[in-house]
Every structure is written in C-alpha cells, then in structure tokens.
Amino acid sequence: MSVVKVMVVDDSFFSRTLIAETLRLGGCEVVGEADSFDSLLETYNNCKPDIVTMDIVMPGADGFECSRALLLNDPSAKIILVSSMKDEETELEAKRIGIVGYVQKPIDGDHLIKVIKNTLSPDSLYEQLIELGLETFNEALSQNITRMTKTPVTFVPMDTFETNYVSQGITTVIGIIGRHSGSMIIDLSTEAADKMVEVLLRRPSKSREEVLAMVAELANIVAGVACSMLNKKDKTYSLRVSPPSVFCSTNTEIASPNLKIQASYAQTTFGPIFLGIGFKKGATSWI
Amino acid sequence: MDITIINPLIASFTDILPQIGFSSVERRSISLVGSTLDYDGILVHISLVGVLKGAVLIGMSLDSAKLFASKMMMGMSVTEFDLLAQSAISEMGNMVCANACTQFSQVGITGLDISPPLLLIGRNGQATLPVPQTIAINFTVDSIDINVYVGLIQSK
Image (cartoon, rainbow over the protein chains, first blue to last red):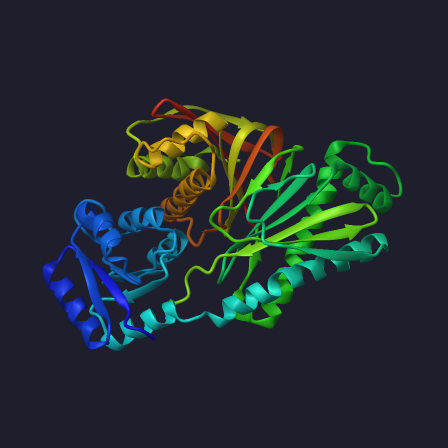
C-alpha cells in the first residue's frame, strides 16, 4: 500500500500532536490538521486525505456535525472517530452517519493503524454480498412466483441504473439493515399485478387495496427469503428487513443517488417485474 | 399510534437543518392521516428497523426541492433537479433520520437503524406506508414548504 495520507481533526493541540506522531510512526503521512469546524472543509479540500481522524467532543460543532459536513462535501470521505467516548449508542450514531471506524482514546497506535488499513483494504464480505446480492434476490423472486403461481420466471440483467428508473405503476421499497444496510425495489405495472392477483385468488381483484397488499406481501417474502439466504452464507451479515412501503404512479422516477443499485428484469407470464437491490459499504472497521 | 412518538424526529429536523444552511425551521401543523397519502413532487424514503419499524417520508414540490438543494449548496443555482441536487436532498434525509435515532435513544428507544435513502420523483402519486396510521407534519423551512410523514409501529 502506498503511504496513507491522513488529516487529523481535534480541538486539543496535544491530542493532534499525539495522534499525528502515532500516525507517522505507523508509516502514514499527516497531510492536514483542523481544530474546529471553521477550518475543516478548507483543509480537507486542500489536502485531500485518504483518511480523516475525528474527535467527538469539540467546542462549537462536535465530531458528528463535522463528519456530516465532510460527508456532504465528499460522500466518499473516510472518517474514523477517535474519542474517549465509546458506548453502543455513540457507535450506532457514527455508523448511521456513515463514519467507517471508531478508535478509543487513549490511542493504541497499532490498533489505529490496523483500523486504517482495514478501512482502505477491500472488504471481502461486502464484495461477496455485492456478487451474490442480486442473484440471491432473483432466486427468491423466481422461487416465490413459481411456487405461488406455477408459472416460470426468467431474468434479463440490467446495468446498474445510472440514470433514474421510471416506474411501471406500482413500486415497493423495502429497507435492509445489518452489517451493510441497503434497499430493495420491486416495480411492476398495475396490469401485471392485477393478473397475478387473479391467478393467486382464482378471481379478479375486488379492489386496488387487494392488489397493493399482494404486491407488498410478495416484496416482503422476497426480501425476507433473500436476506435469510444471505445470512446463511455468512451470519455476520445479520440482515433484517423493514416492512414494505408501496408507491403508485406511472412516470414516477426512482433515484438512488447515494447508493449503487444492481437491477434485473424478471420476465413473467404477467409482465416484466423490475428488481433492484443495493447495499452500502458503510462501516467495516468496528474492531 | 402514540403521537408523541414523533417528538425525536421533530427535534432532529429542527436540530439538523440549521447545521446545513437553513436559518428558520417552523413547525406548522401535525395531523394524523391513514396509511395512504398523495404526493406531487419528490419524496425521500427511509426505512427504520428496530423496536420501532416502518418508514419516514420527506416530501416537497419539485420547485421547493430545487430551492432546498440550492440552499444546501450555499446558494448555488439549481435549475434542474439533477444528480447533485438529488444527492443533497437524499443526504439531508439520511442526516435527519440518523439523528432522530439518536434522539430516540435519549428517550429510551435504543438500537434503531435506518436504510439508505431512496428518492421518488413524480406527479399525482400515492404512497402507502406499512402502518394503519401515519403522522403528517408540515414544516416551513426558510419559506420552503416540507411535509414529513412518519409511519412507525412497535415491532412484535
């Protein structure tokens, strides 16, 4: 690995000096220091570090506020909290914001360097999740449609949707949390949903609510089954799903500007079903 | 749904927005609506999972979204609701909901986690949240009209 460039954010001159010295001894280059929110963005944009170490308790804006500002300025910023505070809720808040690691003060130099290396090295579990994710969700969708309606399903892969996807009529969104949080999108036309309800209930749908409930339940089952399959591959994924939200509108665009979505089209007897799945790399260095 | 459940979310909204460039956050109204609501413009969707589960939607008109993104980007002109503007609004949703989870923990509701934000942009749409009732909160943020819909239930 080439020399890692680090920026240190801490209001204490002594702490900055100590962290900077620890980093230098560990083979890193300290390219910038900031003592408060005021000089944060300018320093970051000037020195373009690979890693930022961030104190939590600072006068004025705290480490979380500074981290939000940095991530808003550069969503790919890699921030490691370095603080004497370390409790479950502070860790959770850091993860939710998008902070990648957490090291407790007083700093153990070897530990800090290990966290930095982990942050910058490829995350094999995440890569496995990305490799298996869409395939697993495809399998769960296919299995369930085939079981429920006794009709075949084939898939046409789509490139990751770089531009926004336009809904066919009914969109279901399910949030996923766990080692890597994510989102699943299932989208189909109202006609396709109507036809599917007719096959499942052996009668035409009586109401729009009935159709939406079927679509929500299908998405719920697909997400639950797929996440269980992924958790079986590696239990540390610990994926859990939210209940489904359903959106109805033709011409609604669905955008995921901060999360890469992989997608496929399931070709079914009822019409095409769009399936999109994305996972956030997120926190990987909570050791 | 116990309406006080939304207090941490309101607190988060009023805490976070001044940090990202807004000077006035005014809560205009709170109402209880059903599980289905109409939207016209943009919606940021974020799921919550934990002892509470469900979703939060942050909605505004497309023109408001451009204005909002412009304010977040320190007054940069936003004539199209492009990727940068979409990213800014999504990030705002993430920040508000992430901070809301922290506010929830301060009232004893710990361990909540959120999914990444998804953005829906459309006209005359309907959203159905996975709860019997949704709380709708209307805010005026620097003259921009914003609706926040909270659909949360206790996990079994």
